[in-house]
Image 1: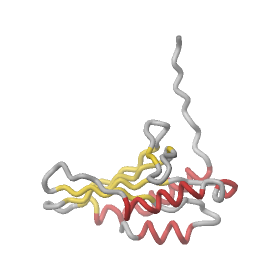
Image 2 (image 1 turned 90 degrees about the vertical axis):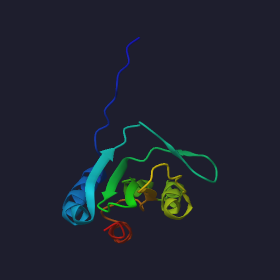
Image 3 (image 1 turned 180 degrees about the horizontal axis):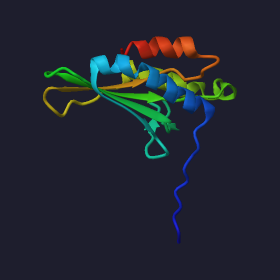
Image 4 (image 1 turned 180 degrees about the vertical axis):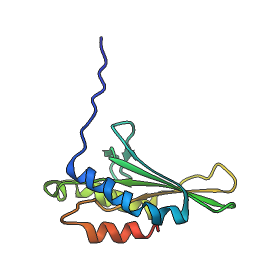
Length: 139
């Protein structure tokens, strides 16, 4: 048996998301000591709180604060979506948006606070005001 890892090619929305985060990097670097945008190629899933449906977020933005005490570590889940999927995957966006208020992370380490967030869908032509407003909360 041969196992083949399929590398998914980035969509146009994914490319635009990467460019967006790249442009915001300077602002993020002022607040955070580390900024990493990672593409999740089916490495992990998160599960909807209400019905357990799985979601494989396309990207995770890891942000580590500069504070020496109670340093905040953010894990921000991001889903770029083509316009044709915005309505069909609305449950995913609702779940991602609920993470900030509903998700609770048990703190295992002293002087570190872990925060899990989700952002609205990234869609360059139809959803930028919503995405940009929520992203600015991180800055």
